[in-house]
Image (cartoon, rainbow, N blue to C red):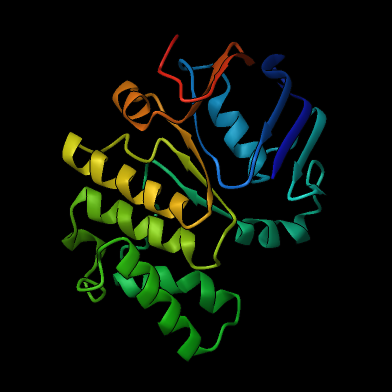
Length: 226
């Protein structure tokens, strides 16, 4: 599913954010990627969604080399890779339903199809009864659920979650992680970038530790070890 070969990212400073990363993530895995601030986690997430370009190496997703993807092809890649961030990036003037449907409208999907998809993904995240509310009327956990629903509308094969619980309390954090686990059970590959030790230890899934831009540890059913 995801294969990285000698992946290196050097910024102009010069700052080596990632150095010679070799990694294989299989379809349907749930992988936590951890590391201290400056370890390269965010850079890796950005490379996977083509928000950044690699300096050296190669990125393959589903057998396709996306390392130096043309800008015209990036929207198609991002329909295969759902993304969730710490800040929910919702449109405040749009309702829950409108926030989730927006990407489908941009892609030119028929209205009837949009309504069906949006209703389905809102049920998955437990917000089927709140589709007419605005972001300001929701809790932080509910806003993140909207963001998750929005990430699912194209039926992505991969979900990249970059610190999705960073702004949430313990109860909401557990609910979000439970939703990510449910999505993974549907067959979606989930990459969770997180600082949260409790989440990682409770998941008991594969854990990849980054240290100074390199993989220092790769554990099956691992724990948060730094």
